[in-house]
Each structure stands twice: as C-alpha cells, then as structure tokens.
Length: 467
Image 1: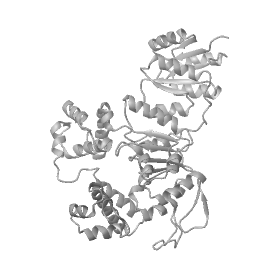
Image 2: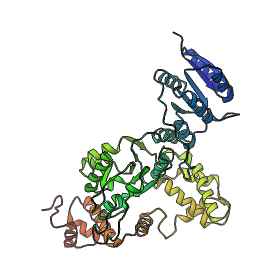
Image 3: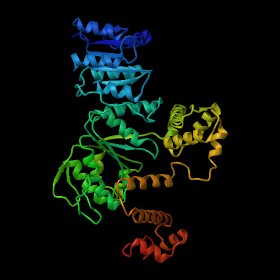
Image 4: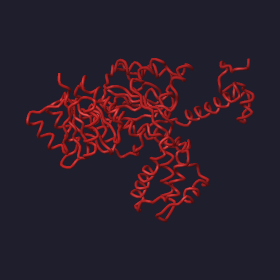
C-alpha cells in the first residue's frame, strides 16, 4: 500500500524544502506548489492528495481563500494552515473554514510530523459552513508572544463548538474581550452578545436581571422586564465574575443550562431559550466548591471548555504592541496625533509588574495621552501621573461608579441600600478573616462597636474562637 501524498503550498522555497524533506524522511510522498492557483489547477485536473499544508499569505491568493475553495469541493480533505502572522482573525478564519489545525511559524518539525500523522488516519469532519457575518474586533485582544498565539488557536477552535466556555484569569486580563471573540467568530455571530457582571448586581436584583420578571412580581415591578437570557436568544450570554453568584441563583442557572428553559420571576409561562453561556471568574472555583460557596455540579456544567488568560507580566513582549494600540486609540478620540513612547519608557513599562494587567496599561496610556502636550513620551511623563491625588482609573471606586451607572441606566431603584449592605459585608468579612473570627478585635480595627458588628452579622451567626 503506497504512503499518503501530502501537498505543500507555500511561496517560501525554504519552507517547502525543509518541510518536504522531513515528510519524505518520514515515508510520505510530497508535492510542492509555490502558489494557491497552481495547487488549485492540479486539483481541478483530478489529482487529490491525502493532506495539504498551506501558508496564509501568498501572491495571487490567500491561504484562507484557498482553504475555502478546496473545502467546498473536498470537505473531507484535511488541511493544515501555516502562518508567520498569527492573530485572532486568521486563526478563527482557518478553524471556521474547516482547517484541521493552525500552526505558527517557525514550527518544530517533530511536532509537525506528529500532527500530519494525526491528521491522516482520522480526517477531521467538516465544520458547519457559515457566512462570515462577523466584524473586525475593535479590542485590545492583541499579542505576538507564544502564549497569545496559543490563546488565539484555542479561541478559534472553541468558537466553532456549540459548548459553554469557562474563562479564568486575573482581573484586567481581558476576559470579556475573549468572550466577545468567541461569539464573533462563532456561528452565533449574527445574534446578540449580552454581557452581565454578576458581582455588579445586588443579589436581590440579580434573579430579575437574569430571568426577567412579570408586572407585580415584587414591590416596584411596575412593568414586565425581559431578562438577559431572553435578550441573548440565539446568541451568547457572558456571565462575568460567576464565582460571586449567590447559591440560590446557581441552582436556577444550573436548570437553565441543563434544560434550556425557565420562568420569569412571578411568571407562569415557561420560557425556552437557545443561548450559549460563556462564564468568567478571577477566583479559583474549585476552592469555592470546597468551601461550599459554589455548586460542584454547576462548575462541571460550566467547565466543558476552559480558557486560562495569561497575566500581562507573563507576556511582557506584547507591551509595546498594546501601548501603540492604546496611544493610537487615544489620539483618535482626542483628535490628536498618537503619542510616541521613548525606548526608556517602553523599557520601564516592560519592567513594571502591572498588577491590573492590560486594563491598567490601557488606563496609563490614556492618562499619559490626555495629560501631556508633547508628542514623544518619556519615563517622567508616566512617573508624574503616579502621584496624582485622584484614585487611579481602574480602581474599585471607578468600577463601582460604572456598575451603579449601569444599574441606573437599566431602571433600577433603591441602589444605595443594597450597595451599602454589600460594602459593609465586605469590610466585615475581611476583618473577621484577618482576626480569625474574633469580633471584638475586628470591631476595633474597623472603628466600630462590637455590638454593631454583631448586629450587622446577625445574632444567629457565631465566629471562630468566640462563644
């Protein structure tokens, strides 16, 4: 039985030679083409390989167009896309078009040979053909580091699957951007993408926000409210900070994920929905399950596909690219030329740990752009901003103001009592954790009376180390 024939389509003669020799040494027959047009001509003559490697950027036609044309005529033919220009658009387009795999140049020959062997015996089933209705991502989901290239590959692959995704990572790493990318590159791209930060909504309002309510369902419910699940019908619902969701609502969410149906608050009509849920958290959900603050069955339901986002300190080489993007955005919004960071500034930015991740970098770039009149920025321009008396953009005060504004814009009332209770509870929890449950010491540290702490905690709650 003859060995499978593999075609190599790439305008780079070195790639054709090196990859061809490696495949020949492994026992495969190969044919090389320097353009997509020449390979298509051979296909139309009746020749058919067992596997095709194709570059993306070639004279006379892109590898993505070549992939689409080949898949239209030969949907079961496995194709592996190669590129030195890895980004989310190319990666997602390749997987959406039915690519078996997407690899970045330069690549390891042993890995490529293992991939070819994997592709040949079990050709990938064709993915559902969908219209490219997505629009370019106007986000900072940028990067050329290996960790970001791998993230783009995972997004491209997962976007095509009809399964939920759990996104984990530190605050400010871009979890919502990734969720939007998963939606925009998926078959649901033409449908709504609805985002909700579950930690930003008071627990007593969150149920209504998710599932809606009927008129008269509770005090203040003067009209029917359509919840986020219904708003996202046919599309994607992004639930950020899912770890902060109350246990009672976790039970309702689990039922919706399992059955695809629910009742509005105070309603009797069964609502059926087709929604892909993408959840995100900066907390270790496994630890929350261990402490009985998160349902294990809900974690299993959400954790079908998982993406872990890297912190900015683990991809420092992307900082110049991101900074240029943010300065360009700021210049456009401010009606000015983009600021140009000097080498010393870029070096200092790459040395800084960025605890707030990409969000902190974005805020720093915008503040420098709006606070300086000269075009070229130096280290002092950044250091001077660090001593401003106002809270830094991206602080909890700023985020709280944004959350309250969002609630008011959605017609919520009585926001202050709910947020006051949450604020006080957070202070108490932190103080009791620090004092290992000793209420009197916690009250002293917070500047409160012990009776006040006891009353706010509730008379039925007892702390460790106290009777």
